[in-house]
Image (tube, rainbow, N blue to C red):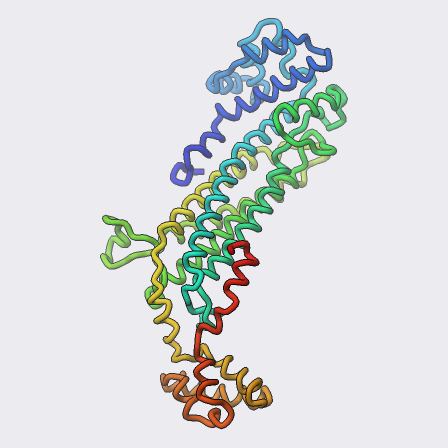
Length: 431
């Protein structure tokens, strides 16, 4: 991921130095596991744990000769040790180290993502409660439908991020795993007890069976899940973009002093943050295709997934960290205009109450649905075509032969549409 979208804490996880540090953790854990089995002298295992070291520069130098990064790494580590170096990488294959270390790196990344998710969840909850009863026009197909509240819109986001968190925890558990099962997963040269010990030491989970590698459907699910979180953010960002349009202008990304919206038009205030996040979501969804194609490896393993994962795993975790953090900042500072929301409700001359009039004709007056619908639709067409308020048209129509003035007043009261807000918030866990 380019520096522009990389936050330092997450970016540090995917440096060569941190990757090799994770490789070394795995190697040390393996020698200790061998020592537990009595195969490696305990003093040698502790010497390795105490003295083993590396530099990324030396690994890169040796890789120019070996053309194999793990061999270059183990030789670099061996240079820092005495006779005990013979136990480094004992019984292991390269992917025992690489896949297990990758599980450690993803676990580190997941801690940041988890924190991001819960911080955004709290921001959404705070805003939902603040605007719980702030009436707003609900729109379907981009057209005014019936009243809702801005808080209910945010409550939907709250429910969605809870689903995102649940999916995240499931997928994270899958990739926070490792394997020490040898060249084809048979434990031929390393007993199962070594894998059990290493995973316990490192806090990773074990898969019931592996080949030379961990099954890549785990990683495909993980990338897809992160892309789904990105799509949730895009969903919310798209809503902000729509509501910031000049003809609606119910919310606005906060415009800081000195900020410029256009090089040509001084008046412009654009939802650039939300637009940026919509673009980032496209990038992350693109990585899902690559992750899916990494699942089908030849036999017990080929290396085709490796080059792809060197790109998509850092990019996706870095990208979702950036997106969660930026959207949290956008929402925290979002300017909301309740007066405009209320004003916009009258842009369609009160036609938003047509269903209430229809239902009263059916329920209160006992008309058939077809007759009631035709009566109301004729008036809505007149209101729209002649740009006249709907309520006076109702009050001066044959509808008044069936409804009282109180019935009509009640039909045009937006508070009726909000009577279940408390119940909905309670079901969302926002009470």
